[in-house]
Amino acid sequence: MARQRKSYYDILGVPKDVDAEKLRQAYCRLAVKYHPDKNPNDKIAEEKFREVTEAYEVLKDPAKRHQYNVQDTYVPIYSNYDDLFNIFKQAVNPDAFNFTFNTSPFNNASAFSYRGRRGQDIKITLDIGLDDVLTGAKKVIKYKRYEKCEDCSGLGSKTNDKTTCSKCRGAGKIVSTIRHGIIIISNESICDTCNGLGYSITMDCGACSGKGIVLKENIVDVIINPGITESNDVVMKYYGHCGEHNGISGSLMIKFRIKPHAHFVRQGNDILHDVNIPFTLAALGGKISINTLRGQHEITITPGTKCNQIMTIQKCGLPDFDNPRKVGDHVVRFIVDVPQNLTQKQKQLINELSKEGL
Image (cartoon, rainbow, N blue to C red; front, side, top):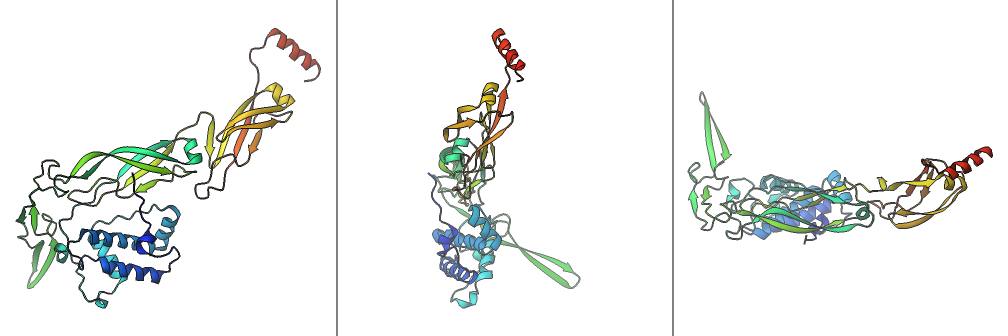
């Protein structure tokens, strides 16, 4: 069952109306507490630092904050830890604290263990009916995702044997020089063989073929809110594929497709409904019972009702997604049936009516 994730405001411990300065102060306090240089080799602190930085990156930006407040679906994706450190450097002055922040990708090699790549997102289309839109629903989704290999704890290696990188010789970086006459230009770059670690790990786990992940079936509960539309996607963070070698998991992205109804057509929050009536009822009027999403409803046909005439049953449609108290209408269009195969007696009666001017 899917976990209820904390909101960005709860993560930072601030109210929704927090101003920019108090937001920055709250972030700095937590970022300093969980910074990897202060908590070396602490996976929990590492994840907390990522979590508070992600929350601050969204809430400090007015546009992103508005999107998050409205839909709670904004999912920033960071390609590496440098993105997180850059956000941190912009928010806090490292000189104000009694420890050093190393944001170089080389200096951080000791602070973090082997970092795998982020897992891929999973996209699923879920078919729902108008009844689900009316009342909301809980759907159980079964899907396959890559999860952390239990045999090697997601490392891809059972022995965890380390071998000095042959390309950078343990430095974690490659230094190249270019000579222009008497001028020598040096350039440093992260070693692409060991990702800056200076060593490689022998990926010898047979259960996952050294990738640290195995394909398994997963089950989650998805909550569908009343009034949902096909544009209201749901993003469940960390329910996508697990990343290789303990990389962070991707997201499960659910798109809704509303199945066509046998009798009703949705138009915004309104329901359009064609109702066939005999021409005698259209002429004389009367009461009939019709189906709506909310059950049987009795309506009165006024005498002389014409074909394609409209009747509106107020607040009998669908709730609004953003404001469930706002409800649409059930709009009835009358289709007057003209009989095709008349009996001899019916023809005689119609002829008599025709003589009376009808």
